Amino acid sequence: MKKNFRILKFKKDKPIFEVRNISKSFDGRSILKKVSLKVYPGELVSLFGPNGAGKSTLFNIAIGAETADSGDILINNQSITQTPIHLRAKDGLGYLPQTRSLFNMSIYENIYGLCQLHIKDPAKQKDETERLLDEFNLQHLRSLNAAVLSGGEAKRLQLARIMINKPKIILIDEIFSMVDPIVVQEMQKYILKIQSMKVGCILTDHNFSTLFDLSDRNYCISDGSIIAEGTKSDLLKNAEAIKRYFGTSFSFN
Image (cartoon, rainbow, N blue to C red):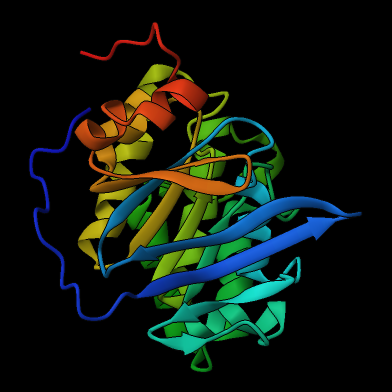
């Protein structure tokens, strides 16, 4: 599914999310080397790269699960580098991991329980729960235990829960992996719906044709460094990206 529109220009004066010169090593091995990227409000950005390129480490640093050796993470030009992991959501950061991360309770309780934590007014807690069940097509599943959901249904529920905190930026890790093509199309629609709410997103996936259909801009990371940035056309013409990720025999129509 391709966008029926393309955002051609974003306000370039103030990124909603920024990674500045992030470096990270483990046991003397350099994993990230002064990585920098930006996302503007409502922009969909794809992050491509081979396994081991540093994508997961970068996401872990952004959410606070890992500490960078140097560099900074910012939301709305305010550093969150020293903000504890459990408080970053309040600053507007959402994260959808590749792994299934749901509570062993009903779909309704998965959403309502988090609404109770983040919304003070009991009436608004219930209203928001019902709104998200509607928004992400989960009403007919509300009484089911989350453990019985299909892959696509589980991802919809995870997206619904992320939206409780009204995020400014969401990091989405391989949302299209291990799901059928029809589910891929469905998830694209929900990501575009989130974009329409002026929420920025960074998406990773090895299905780059699917990401290219969605993305407004792209980064390619290899061996811990950003080696290419720009539109689909920019990346597919970039010699380093072709050599180190797409391959010399790759063609994309």
